[in-house]
Image (cartoon, rainbow over all chains, first blue to last red; front, side, top):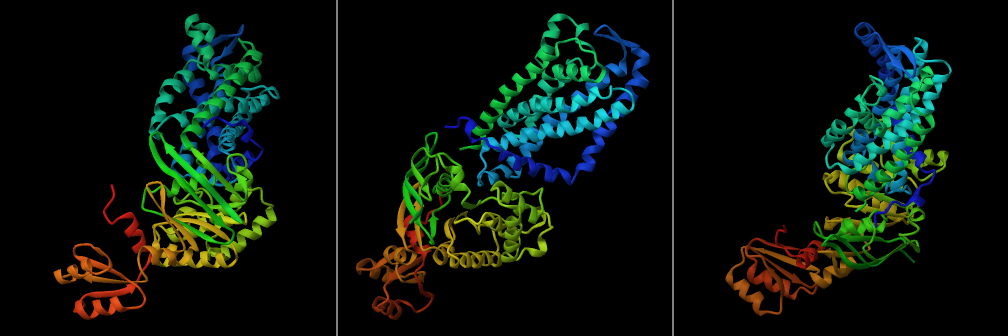
Length: 263
Length: 302
């Protein structure tokens, strides 16, 4: 009964995307502050405080300053947070407290279109944040121009992955404060062990296998590739993994949201 | 022609049956009511009508199309006003109307004109830039009605349109609905305000525990299940109780109060008036509330 119906998806979903853009435009100035200033804070903190302790990082046969190594990972984690936050807390508020989806389901929109629009919107928002961040990084010499511009479409793909799994959790958890659980059990370890703060090649092999499962690892690798031209993995494989992740969790997100909402 | 045709629709949630095989048809141009106590299955029935809830069994056709397969075409010709406030709190009053029109893929210029027309009709013009959060209950409901009317629907479905409103707001909503009726709109509504159903609905059904227990025009239902006139007598004496028990009289003994249902000829009314009404007798017209309470019982439900 509550099967996902892919035939119910049409381009109409763009109207829901537009609705989110309309509400976002009212607060965009506040929202743009974060990606604008965040890289500066991190690079200052790690550059001033950390490089004295660490010196350099060996990555893909190159000797990098620690801040050079870490800056692209910042971009990837910002992409993750933006997309994941949007389809968890923000979508949950729209679904549960504001009954926005109920209102939309009284129109010619299908639930599949609404969920797809939420996911695409979250990815768009992530891409916008990344566009600002890489602009800052390029300006201060931490990302190559024009290669780093590829991070923007890449952030859309990565944003889709995190938005899909976020929406899946939204379909699953009973109350909004339970989002602590996926954040603690999934996002936090992923944030730490995805080659963000240290290269995966430096840790034991058994631990590195777990990192391979994290979508953030693949996004960090690709982002670093576009920002500084260095990579330790295969970019085609990274992209393929992200695509499979999107398909799997995109489907699960639709399924669980449908089970949750259609009674 | 029937705009809505529900054939033996059933809705089950696990082992609980919310709607237990009901059928009804709503004709073009009429206001049709779905009445019943809380938990009677009204909202479930409404949700099946516009395709929000899948039917467990039975058939549902609107405009001659099957809701299972042609839900999108059906919903593009429908206006729906939920019981809960489903307005978009992140948007202004006017944006609520315009964004909603996008979901129907209305032409932009037409949507703009339609929004203007509805803001005027519902006296919301000087609120157009307000945030929805700041609106009072009555204004929010008017906006929700306006939003339901945005796509110029042929049929509107209202789930308890005046629940929770103060008397002024409620009467304003009724006025607007009656004006729409004159324009030829068709409406399906649920309510438990009997006054609302009586003044708005051409025909109605009364539901209880998922079934339809009565159907017809409000006047006919009152005549059949209650009476044209009702006498309410407070603190009835034994003499009166014996009288109603022995005579061929339709009555309800509520302990502290007796209701006697009489016809228009007035013989019974005169006799009761002369013999028993020394004090505290109320003579009034029968209404839908009498019907409702007689059919669904007076006891408090759990």
